[in-house]
Length: 224
Image (cartoon, rainbow, N blue to C red):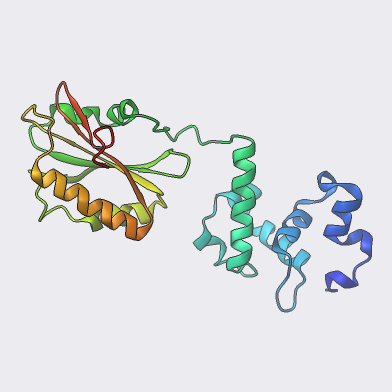
């Protein structure tokens, strides 16, 4: 197939966009502009059409970086361009997955962890959020039993964060005793997890302790 520069000017995606407007371009032409270049043996327009024959537009926009870079013709730079363009559009149109709860306050966290109030043993729950504070995952039992700084390890927290591409986490656990004040182990665990999060670039937004009637927020008490 001919190189893009060998095509008539009216058929080149960029020139066509400038002359006729983006709304008059076909899906393959729009994707070709994002990709910029083709690969050996195929020009960018052919690569774009080939990708869209395999992936619908909707599915393409849901692919993660790792998935995109596995597609022949999409390298790291092209994957980043596609992801950035898709995210910008989603934000501009305020497109959100209605199945993802948004966590804005301690009250929102408690709504996700209310079941902990009645547990007779300590349970550590972890809430995982994306950059829009949408809950992408909730692990209800990261740890069960008396929380001990020697037993609760950051890897249990952050393995899930990396798996679900979370940008931040919130820790929640219960005190069956009814006293919401953090123990020394609670303080040490929080400190270790905060330090691990900084290394990985994942924020620990809060650690909340709940009882049947009370709540203690590390963030509100300025311990985070």
